Length: 309
Image (tube, rainbow, N blue to C red; front, side, top):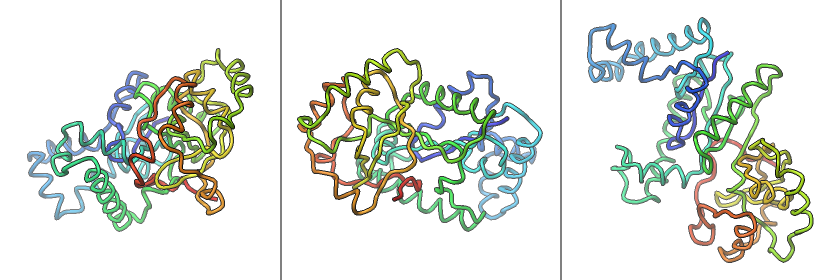
């Protein structure tokens, strides 16, 4: 079986693919296929790129070649925006990334895209605009919604996880999928979940008990599924805080959830906690949040439809 991997701009997809290559996969990229076709036609990549702007058949060649490899070869990892669409029998992975973190990586990385923006906020807005244009283009060309989670078997967040951790968790899910297929599984980074209760209301006894239960587990995905709500681009814990912070304290990285609630009743339960209010949680579980809602302010949420009632 093959794996197709795509995701948000700035999500670290290439780094994850390099880690997955260590598991014995042959990597096929859209850029690699493009270079192969340029060589076959006896033109440079730049020349072929100019031809492709006016000739849809160039894209069709890449799409058809992806489909052919997907049908005829095994143990292939497709690093491509749309390979999941042309290799439907693959294990389809979407790498989800927080909008601010994707912008920070892009702006700090010195990539060509970063030169277009003046700061991280401008980068965040620019990436959102590019994603919207890309979504519209894919809809027009292929009649698909790129940001529909139902396209994918595993949606896994890369905001607060290393490429090695992400690759390890993808492989764990891949092995399970080969035996018992699942669809649209959502695994988020638990260090991006914010509390909704003051620390004085936190059940320390339940936390200590959970730490004792799971401290020797090897899994990097927590076994409990917390109830979450989203607001202003952040994810908050409505229920299961003791389990979440115990998981963080014992080295877990991911949490498997059904969706992030965004109905009015759920968002009303989210208080305006300041950075100082979450400091006790950080000290307890020995970690630091990447950003604080009261300092950064609102930001775009996930582009993928991971929200619901």
